[in-house]
Length: 213
Image (cartoon, rainbow, N blue to C red; front, side):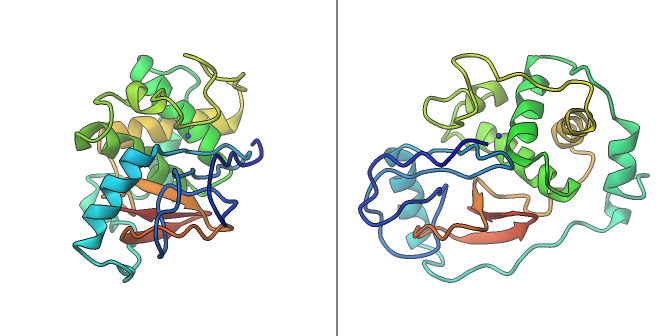
């Protein structure tokens, strides 16, 4: 989970943001740009709750970047690439996996595998958090979140492409917990090229995105 960024009412900012680097909230939050310009947009109520939570912790201090877990903690797989190679396919198991794969595809298909896994993991974390809808499709289709969404569907997907097959594999790896995400507790992310001003705790950077809790 590209078009140009959507900006609703930020006083002095024209950027995407799921979470911020510092400063105060001036207006509703805007989202994380994916590889084709798609953005992840947060309503003000979610951002305000997250900002309050962050202020009680490490208000402007970045948490050290996380690294991907070592292979020995991942069962018998020798690498994330090997897991993905074993799970390449065009068909998803069910609607939930379809939603997770589509968000990964539209938001991060140009990313390294670790970056794709980190994005997929944000969807899973949101579904488990109690602060967002409790299903992956609910998270993806929550109003005003992912701008690639079209009503209750997605734009056309090149389902025979390597990008889609990798997204399906990443969705399966993430959903089944086959490999630990490099930023396993993230709930928000934005593209590196923007500098949103939010008071959330940074938990790491992977590929073209920066992740926050």
